[in-house]
Length: 209
Image (cartoon, rainbow, N blue to C red; front, side, top):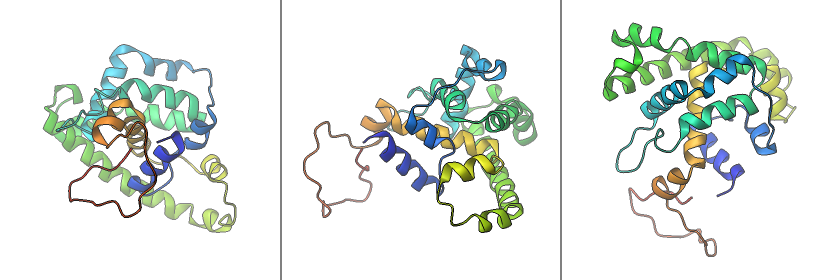
């Protein structure tokens, strides 16, 4: 599975395009601002990994943290986001403890794995409401520009979605582009054979990487 296929898979799961995907495919790199540089600090990457793990926890297969998603996230934010998108992501992520106290009464790092998952679910609900409101506010613009098929154009012109939506997108993308995600969460065939559109499927089978 190449980068484009992995991104298409993530977009299908999330039900929309992945912000920054065009620049990711083009291999764009940028110098990091002071705020973005802070995302690369060890304590911060560990914290990013903890929140990513709350979205994709370890079960019978490794979770997002072990797959290195915490280290992947700052690279995506630096290389693939505009300044406005970076600011939305960083400002939102910096509110994680405040939201955690609001939802579960403690800072995020003090919560159990189960409560961290509940915080992630609450953030997902908040993000959905925020994005729906924003989509309604930008409806006229999107309808006017419906014939412009360049997703990057829309991405740059429209305000960023909720920061947790950005976070979830990067988490999914990082996980399914990682070695562990491809080889253990999915069925990995190093040298695949011909395409078989009628391959037998049993309920619970993993998707192919």
